[in-house]
Picture 1 (cartoon, rainbow, N blue to C red):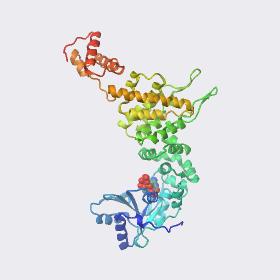
Picture 2 (picture 1 turned 90 degrees about the horizontal axis):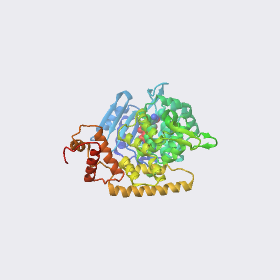
Picture 3 (picture 1 turned 45 degrees about the vertical axis):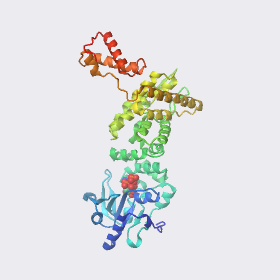
Picture 4 (picture 1 turned 30 degrees about the vertical axis):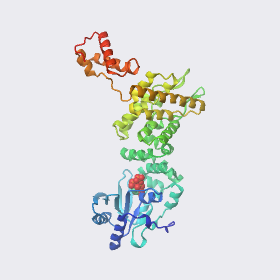
Length: 477
Ligand code: CTP
């Protein structure tokens, strides 16, 4: 055992700890607060999830605790032998100390009663196996059999047992290791890292929902790229996101190479993350070049091209989201849209920045225009400083024009002033090709600056274009 002399009684202010202390004093049991709560306490982070392990019945202790706290809600999970007491400001989970062994093809363990040490042994990492005593005579005493305190101080992720055993028992822990390392900026100790490498294939038994949950947490880190680089390093990336793995590598023809799109993507991701906490913008950054492997082509004159990769990439997003059990609602459509449009501001800034091109961009990006601009700026990772400066200067012009045009024409949430119904009404038409032609003509004329975004001008254009199509007005609006 390492240094167990520390005492953290002061930190156990929440009244539930006192309740547990008093109850176990009368039953003579041992109970400890353990895991994430203790880890977060030492990292000076607040945690509302309290895990309590009791050498005895977790359910029985939870029932008694719930009676002591007004408004407490008790939920018992008989088949797991656990119970949860939900208080106003905390959720406390109770479990009996256990010894566990696992079968090869399942995350469901065979469970037996055990001691505190057995329980600590079966936990994922030394930093998550720290416990504080809740017994009256040792209240707040630190129990750290694996040197988790030192690992926390030194920023190290390490399994308490042989890593291959810990990870085979529950392969989700491989992702947890990477998630903790990424969020805390910690290092995964070599032996533990090797253990992940050896066990990587077993990630296949983990549900996509659990994997998604870990990836979502990883994505909130300050430098999310660290997680994806680690996934790649240990051989998990091909199972989790093969589309990203496919971005790796450089091809050369006649001495001409393209950049490694995986490392480029990693830079773009961190640059976007530094600007915005919007997790979906971060996913868009991660996936922005996902269409490149499928569109890669070498041309003697042009060199390497990835024609239409933005469109191809955006079409890949629903498949990835469905497979990963990510939400398939407007958040997915946002990512699709950003991936699709991510080249537009660059192309726009390479030419002369015309009002009409800016209006079209505003129309298509709508309220997401700022996010799109952030993604595009982050996408410039060239090592050629002069090129970078030129792009950034051009982007300034694009941004200024976007602002001017938005103020003038209100394109962002633009709805053409003449609806399809008005067109049908005016010419006595049923829904037909002509209605679409007239609607588009009006929209295009506004976006191209031929007419203003104004009812009268749009109406006049409708009448004129209708006449060109041989239509007669049946009703004046
Ligand atoms: N645990 C484990 N193996 C897992 C999940 C959890 O050993 N696959 C243990 C760890 O001791 C962990 C505790 O159960 O600290 C509580 O798990 P959980 O609440 O899922 O995670 P936290 O560690 O509290 O971290 P977070 O809330 O950030 O997920």
